Image 1 (cartoon, rainbow, N blue to C red):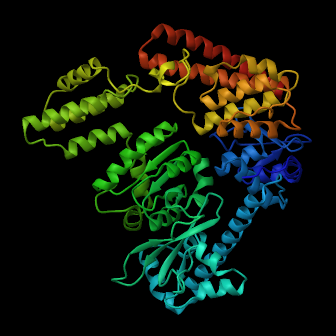
Image 2: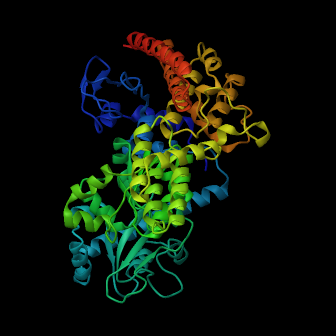
Length: 595
C-alpha cells in the first residue's frame, strides 16, 4: 500500500482540533493560554493529571506517563494502527489525503477496493431499511424481539433483512452504475441467479474502522437451511480475519482495557444492550491467528466466553497459546451448560453475565478444573492420572502466586480424596523434572535468537509497551541535539521486542537520514518510516526525553523484579527495589521541570 505524503500528514495535523478530539474522551478545563487539563482517559484517577497542549497538539499524563500527538491518541483510544488512525482523523476533520506515487496496478486495486466498499455500504443501508419498513420482515422483527433485542441496538449495528425473492439489491446496484463483475466480487450476487442473500436477517461484518466487508445471514423460517451463511470469501471478506462488532467495541475495549469474545451475533447485541459494549463475536468457536492479532490490538486482556461444550473448551485452550505469545492475558469465562450470553442476560439480567466475568479463570485454573471434571475419578489409576496432569499444570504457576497455587491444591485434594501434601509432593516431582517447557528465554544464539541479556524481557511486547517504547524513539528522532545521546543510553533490556531494538540500532547509525538504507525486514522498515514521519517537524525538550527514558528504565526494573521474585532471588529483589525508588524520585523531578 502506498504511503501518505508528508504534506498530507502536516495538513491533517494543522486541521485537528485537539480540544475537540480529546474532549470526546474526557472533560477538559482550561488551565492556561494553550493548556487544558482533565482526568486521564488511560487510567483511573480522582485528581486531574492529564494535560493537553492545544497549540502543539500534544497530550501528557503526569500520573501514568502516557503521551503523544493526535494520531497516537486515536491509535490508543480507537485501537487503530497508524494508517487507520490517519484515515480516521482525515474523515473527521475533512482533510483529503494524498498518497505518494504508486504504480498503476496498485492504484487500480485501491480504486476497485473503494468501489466495492461503496457497494457494500449501499447494500447495508438497503437491508437495514427493509428490516423496519417491510411487512415481509415481520417474522424477522418478531424473532429479534423474542431474543430480547431492542430497536436501538439493532440500529446501532445496522442489522437488516434480505427480501425473499428477486434481485432488489443487484438491480439497484446496476442502476447506480456498478458492473456485474463488481456486484459478484462484493459477494452480493452471481451466476445469473439474482441476489445471493434471500429471506434472511442480515448482520453487517465490518472492519475496525466500520467499513462493511461482508455479511452474516441467519435463516428466518423453520427448516430453512443452512441456518447461517456468510459472504463468500473474496478480495475484501476473509472469515478468519473477522470479529463481529469490533468497530463498535474497539473504543470501549480500549477504555476498559479488556475485550469480551463470544460466539454469535445476537450474543454481542445482547451484551452491548446490557452495558458490556466491549464485546465481539468470533462467529464460531475457532480463533484464527488474524483474529487473535485483532483482539491483541484492541485490549491487553481478553475474556473468552464460549459454549461449555467440548468444542468451545478446545477452542479456548488453542487460543491461549497464541494470545499469550502476543503478550495478552487470557481469562476464561465458565458459561453454564446449554446457555449462551444472550439467553443468560435475557433470562437473568445483565448482572448474571457480569458475575461470570468477575469469576473468570486463568488458563491454568481452567485446565485444572477441566481435568477434574473430565477425568476418571472412579478408579485409583484414573485418579493417579488426573493427579499427575493437575500437578503438571499447577507447577506452571509462578511461586509468587501463592494464593492461586494453594487454592488449586485444595481443589485437587478435595476432588481426588487425597491429602494436600500428596498434591504438593506431585508438584515437587514436576519441579524436579524441570517444570514447564522452556520458553524463548532459554534459546541461545545457535537457535537463531539473539543472546539473552540479564534482565532483558523475552516475551513479545504488549501493545502498551510497544507504544511507549516507539514514542520514546520518536522523541529521540525529533531532537537533533540530544536524541543520539539518549539512543546510546537505551539498552536491549529497555526494549521489549526485537523489531524495536533493530529500529534503535538503525536510528543510531543513520540519525541524520533515518530512511536511508532501510532494512529488508518489512516490519522494522514500517516502524522506522512511522517514527521518521512523526518526528518530522516535531520538537522534543530535554525534560521530555529524560521522562521518556525514565519510563523505559522503570519498566526494565519492574520486569527484572518479576524475574527475581519468580526465582526467589531476595538479594536481587532488594537491589532492584532501591533502583526503582531512585527512578521514581528522578521521574518526580522531571515532572517538575515539565510543568
